[in-house]
Amino acid sequence: MHIAEKSDFCSSLILLALMGFCWNESGNIDQGINFALGPLFFPYLLMGLITLCSLILLVRSVGRGRAPASGGAAIADRKTFFYRAALLCLSAAYILALPLGGYAPCTFVYLVAAMTLLGKRAVKSLLIYGVIALCMTCGVQYVFADLLHLFLP
Image 1 (cartoon, rainbow, N blue to C red):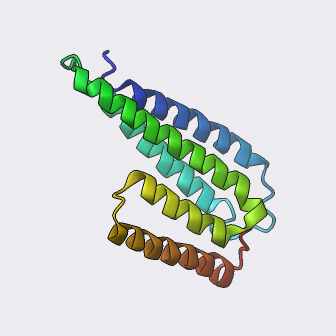
Image 2 (cartoon, one colour):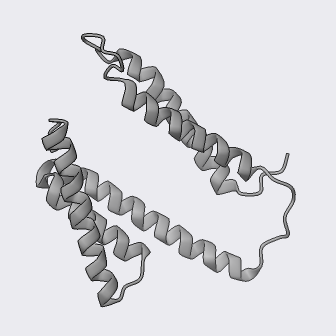
């Protein structure tokens, strides 16, 4: 067995371990009255989909031998590592700021910052990022708070 994409292989193993932990811990959730779908339906659905995607990623990361990477690939790997680390730090800051700032402002700022980090940085693109972030933030707020009566921080 040859692991062609080590980062994908490690990511899929970490996700599979995390989903196994979440599945095990979900047994401790009080289900209250049994409904047709139950309160654990959505978490189980998400855990199942993430597990399926992780398994697909795991299988795809194991491949036949590939040619060794050139010097240009090392530069691209450093750039990719920077973007991944920056997005991870941005996500951690979002999680820490969420209880203090509330859902709507923190999510809007996070989405605009993440899209700016990963996307094109032209004025037109920044305006599009702002509109998309505003629509997503308001849409999720509406669905959860008004339709599902699940209040966000």
